[in-house]
Image (cartoon, rainbow over all chains, first blue to last red; front, side, top):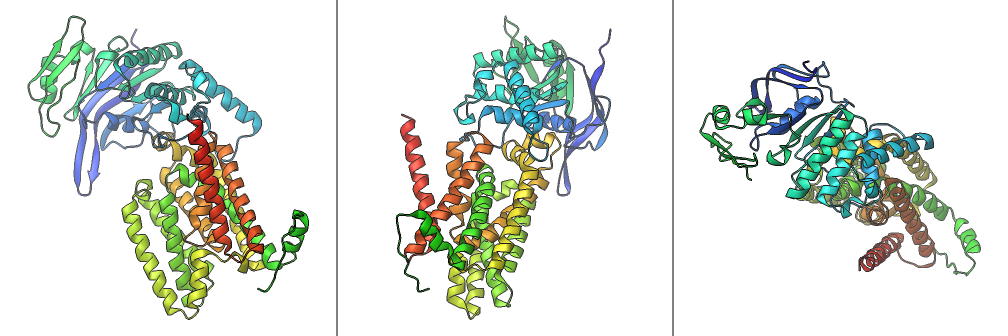
Length: 273
Length: 281
């Protein structure tokens, strides 16, 4: 049985206007994501991975074409999407406790103060989200004392506290070492499976994701290639996408190494491991 | 002022003596309102790393106040007009601009220079400039207290309404925006709050010493509290304590109130830093 699509992208063209000049990030791009899928978004720096998230969140409007999320145009007040950006605006020295950050995910938009009963409910929901990501013991620790991996769990809990159906995670593995990378991917996979959440995860390196991935969206040169990791990440498909020779190597354990792709502004690009 | 009060050990009789004087009563009233507002707003200024922007706004206010004096208006009108326009401009340019020290510093120096020109053109030169730069809390009239109270209540109401969105956009701008909050809108509201808070705080500590009430108590609170609510409470308490104690001491000693307030806040800051650095070992 074919699964229901939760995200559809049809003939999408999108980009940024810088004064009179226009920088196109996507041109005539189409693909769809099914409910419950775990999708890795890959591609070189500046290819448009984060732009894709902005489009899905409704923070950037397409120039032409159509995007639907939950069957309608993306709206920026969508509580059914949990989002973890690549960068956070707070000071790394900040002594605010983790629970407060998670709570913002449930009540940050509301005006006024919470009444005691409401506040209790918010705390309970936030502690539950922390428990789901295995970080309940970090609830009262201040952010400045947390490691990169612990912080990622807090941000994940914040994204989960509103019971989202889609998780958009922008480079959550960037600050983690190799061992923590695979632990964190397993955690996301387990949470997503148990709660039936669709996950779109931007990463630089596909290898830690291999065990969890259903499909790959590879963004380069204004276009995307979508499919199983093996179908997208091969020399032929990437050469076509980059319009320049790209070689994909695989080791005995199925791990990828991508070499080449020296095109246009993007320059040399390769994936390690 | 030719009063020669004597300090007694009985604090209640001391306070009774102090409050016999209208100017002291007004100073305590306005000082308390300003301290509460500055402590509250200051918590978010430190959280958003906008301390220098807030400082710069007070200098812009100085020029406005000096200009108002020059054309015969109440300085508070010029203060409000200039700080609010400056605040709106900074808010519109966005938070990233608010942390650009060099550009802000350049504009700040120019505004201060312009203020000096206005003051020198104004015949009331020395005293007016002095009170704008360093505060003149002992010269607050009862109508000033009323204006301060109304402005203070307005700021606290707006802060109470936007408390959580302000916290959200301060801590995690991108997620807040994705959740549908207008980062620009909240930023503008906040800059306006700083503008009004600065304008009323100038009466107490003056434009040059605004840090003492708007930033230092909040910076101390950020070192002590890990929950925003506790942090705001500590920030307000420190600002109020320093203002009260500063006013109390100044009644008995012939030195400026702002000196005492800034010194008290500074001593608390140093003590807290020392204690927290000892705790690390």
